[in-house]
Length: 183
Image (cartoon, rainbow, N blue to C red; front, side):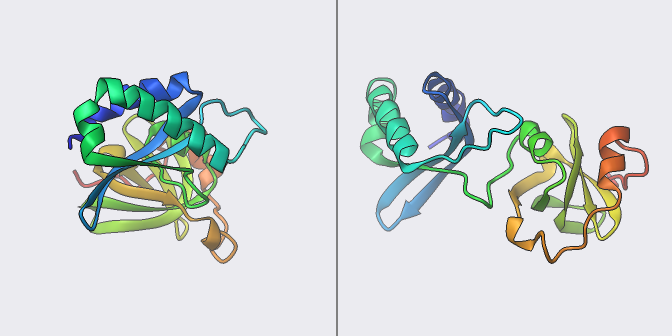
Protein backbone atom coordinates (compact mmCIF):
# COMPACT_ATOMS: atom_id res chain seq x y z
CA UNK A 1 0.00 0.00 0.00
CA UNK A 2 1.42 3.37 -1.06
CA UNK A 3 0.91 5.72 1.88
CA UNK A 4 2.04 8.77 -0.09
CA UNK A 5 -0.82 8.31 -2.58
CA UNK A 6 -3.32 7.89 0.26
CA UNK A 7 -2.16 10.76 2.42
CA UNK A 8 -3.50 13.74 0.45
CA UNK A 9 -7.01 12.33 -0.15
CA UNK A 10 -7.25 11.19 3.48
CA UNK A 11 -6.13 14.62 4.70
CA UNK A 12 -8.82 16.30 2.56
CA UNK A 13 -11.53 13.96 3.86
CA UNK A 14 -10.42 14.41 7.47
CA UNK A 15 -10.52 18.20 7.05
CA UNK A 16 -14.18 17.88 6.01
CA UNK A 17 -14.76 16.00 9.27
CA UNK A 18 -12.94 18.72 11.29
CA UNK A 19 -9.71 16.81 11.92
CA UNK A 20 -6.11 16.89 10.75
CA UNK A 21 -3.94 13.89 9.95
CA UNK A 22 -0.98 13.89 12.32
CA UNK A 23 0.56 10.64 11.12
CA UNK A 24 -0.33 7.80 8.75
CA UNK A 25 1.17 4.32 9.20
CA UNK A 26 0.66 0.87 7.84
CA UNK A 27 1.22 -2.12 10.07
CA UNK A 28 1.01 -5.89 9.88
CA UNK A 29 -0.41 -7.73 12.87
CA UNK A 30 -0.43 -11.43 12.18
CA UNK A 31 -2.24 -11.83 8.87
CA UNK A 32 -4.07 -8.52 9.20
CA UNK A 33 -2.97 -5.35 7.44
CA UNK A 34 -3.80 -2.17 9.33
CA UNK A 35 -3.97 1.42 8.19
CA UNK A 36 -3.33 3.47 11.34
CA UNK A 37 -4.24 7.15 11.47
CA UNK A 38 -3.30 9.50 14.27
CA UNK A 39 -5.70 12.45 14.17
CA UNK A 40 -6.12 15.73 16.01
CA UNK A 41 -8.68 18.52 15.96
CA UNK A 42 -8.18 20.76 12.96
CA UNK A 43 -8.56 24.04 14.85
CA UNK A 44 -6.10 24.97 17.58
CA UNK A 45 -6.60 28.22 19.44
CA UNK A 46 -4.04 29.75 21.81
CA UNK A 47 -5.57 28.04 24.85
CA UNK A 48 -7.25 25.21 22.92
CA UNK A 49 -5.51 21.90 23.50
CA UNK A 50 -8.57 19.66 23.30
CA UNK A 51 -7.83 15.99 23.52
CA UNK A 52 -9.13 13.60 20.90
CA UNK A 53 -11.77 11.46 22.57
CA UNK A 54 -13.03 7.96 21.84
CA UNK A 55 -16.19 9.55 20.40
CA UNK A 56 -14.00 11.63 18.05
CA UNK A 57 -12.20 8.47 16.89
CA UNK A 58 -15.53 6.72 16.26
CA UNK A 59 -16.82 9.72 14.27
CA UNK A 60 -13.64 9.80 12.17
CA UNK A 61 -13.79 6.03 11.64
CA UNK A 62 -17.44 6.15 10.52
CA UNK A 63 -16.80 9.09 8.19
CA UNK A 64 -13.71 7.55 6.63
CA UNK A 65 -15.17 4.05 6.20
CA UNK A 66 -18.14 5.34 4.21
CA UNK A 67 -15.83 7.47 2.05
CA UNK A 68 -13.23 4.71 1.57
CA UNK A 69 -15.92 2.22 0.57
CA UNK A 70 -16.56 4.48 -2.44
CA UNK A 71 -13.09 5.92 -3.18
CA UNK A 72 -10.82 3.02 -2.20
CA UNK A 73 -13.09 -0.03 -2.17
CA UNK A 74 -10.32 -2.52 -3.06
CA UNK A 75 -8.14 -1.17 -0.25
CA UNK A 76 -10.99 -1.37 2.25
CA UNK A 77 -11.23 -5.11 1.56
CA UNK A 78 -7.49 -5.55 2.28
CA UNK A 79 -6.92 -3.41 5.37
CA UNK A 80 -8.51 -2.60 8.69
CA UNK A 81 -8.75 1.02 9.71
CA UNK A 82 -7.47 2.11 13.13
CA UNK A 83 -8.02 5.67 14.36
CA UNK A 84 -6.09 7.01 17.34
CA UNK A 85 -5.33 10.24 19.13
CA UNK A 86 -1.71 11.36 18.85
CA UNK A 87 -1.30 10.86 22.60
CA UNK A 88 1.08 12.63 24.94
CA UNK A 89 4.14 11.40 23.02
CA UNK A 90 2.61 12.64 19.79
CA UNK A 91 4.40 12.23 16.49
CA UNK A 92 5.85 15.38 14.94
CA UNK A 93 5.58 15.06 11.17
CA UNK A 94 5.14 18.60 9.81
CA UNK A 95 6.84 21.96 10.21
CA UNK A 96 3.60 23.24 11.79
CA UNK A 97 3.89 20.61 14.55
CA UNK A 98 7.35 21.86 15.53
CA UNK A 99 6.11 25.46 15.49
CA UNK A 100 3.04 24.58 17.58
CA UNK A 101 5.14 22.75 20.19
CA UNK A 102 8.11 25.15 20.31
CA UNK A 103 9.70 25.08 23.74
CA UNK A 104 8.71 21.44 24.37
CA UNK A 105 11.10 18.50 24.63
CA UNK A 106 11.24 16.04 21.74
CA UNK A 107 13.13 12.99 20.52
CA UNK A 108 14.23 12.91 16.90
CA UNK A 109 15.75 10.07 14.90
CA UNK A 110 17.22 10.82 11.48
CA UNK A 111 17.71 8.58 8.45
CA UNK A 112 21.28 9.76 8.03
CA UNK A 113 23.81 11.04 10.57
CA UNK A 114 23.84 14.81 11.08
CA UNK A 115 27.37 15.70 12.22
CA UNK A 116 27.81 12.06 13.28
CA UNK A 117 24.55 11.92 15.23
CA UNK A 118 21.27 10.17 14.38
CA UNK A 119 19.38 10.50 17.69
CA UNK A 120 18.55 13.84 19.26
CA UNK A 121 16.72 14.71 22.46
CA UNK A 122 16.24 18.41 22.82
CA UNK A 123 13.99 21.40 23.29
CA UNK A 124 12.21 22.57 20.14
CA UNK A 125 13.23 26.01 18.92
CA UNK A 126 12.64 27.60 15.54
CA UNK A 127 11.20 25.58 12.66
CA UNK A 128 11.43 26.57 9.02
CA UNK A 129 10.44 24.76 5.84
CA UNK A 130 13.92 23.22 5.77
CA UNK A 131 14.91 22.46 9.36
CA UNK A 132 14.02 22.45 13.02
CA UNK A 133 16.34 23.80 15.69
CA UNK A 134 16.64 21.83 18.91
CA UNK A 135 18.63 22.63 22.02
CA UNK A 136 20.42 19.53 23.23
CA UNK A 137 22.71 19.79 26.25
CA UNK A 138 23.01 23.56 25.86
CA UNK A 139 23.92 23.37 22.15
CA UNK A 140 21.60 24.48 19.35
CA UNK A 141 21.42 21.94 16.54
CA UNK A 142 19.72 22.26 13.19
CA UNK A 143 18.05 19.07 11.97
CA UNK A 144 16.87 19.07 8.33
CA UNK A 145 13.18 18.11 8.15
CA UNK A 146 13.76 15.84 5.16
CA UNK A 147 16.37 13.86 7.16
CA UNK A 148 13.96 13.09 10.02
CA UNK A 149 12.80 9.48 10.13
CA UNK A 150 10.79 9.73 13.35
CA UNK A 151 10.10 12.47 15.88
CA UNK A 152 7.90 12.57 18.98
CA UNK A 153 7.28 14.82 21.95
CA UNK A 154 8.96 13.57 25.14
CA UNK A 155 6.71 14.93 27.91
CA UNK A 156 7.73 12.36 30.51
CA UNK A 157 11.37 13.47 30.32
CA UNK A 158 10.71 17.22 30.59
CA UNK A 159 11.01 17.46 34.40
CA UNK A 160 14.31 15.57 34.59
CA UNK A 161 15.93 17.25 31.57
CA UNK A 162 17.83 20.51 32.17
CA UNK A 163 15.72 23.45 31.03
CA UNK A 164 16.70 25.12 27.75
CA UNK A 165 18.85 28.23 27.84
CA UNK A 166 19.08 29.08 24.16
CA UNK A 167 15.80 27.97 22.54
CA UNK A 168 14.01 31.29 23.13
CA UNK A 169 16.94 33.08 21.46
CA UNK A 170 16.93 30.64 18.53
CA UNK A 171 13.19 31.09 17.95
CA UNK A 172 13.66 34.85 17.50
CA UNK A 173 16.95 34.72 15.57
CA UNK A 174 16.24 31.66 13.40
CA UNK A 175 19.72 30.18 12.76
CA UNK A 176 22.13 32.45 14.61
CA UNK A 177 24.63 30.30 16.47
CA UNK A 178 23.04 27.04 15.31
CA UNK A 179 25.20 24.04 14.61
CA UNK A 180 24.82 23.27 10.88
CA UNK A 181 24.70 19.94 9.13
CA UNK A 182 27.87 18.86 7.34
CA UNK A 183 25.79 18.19 4.20
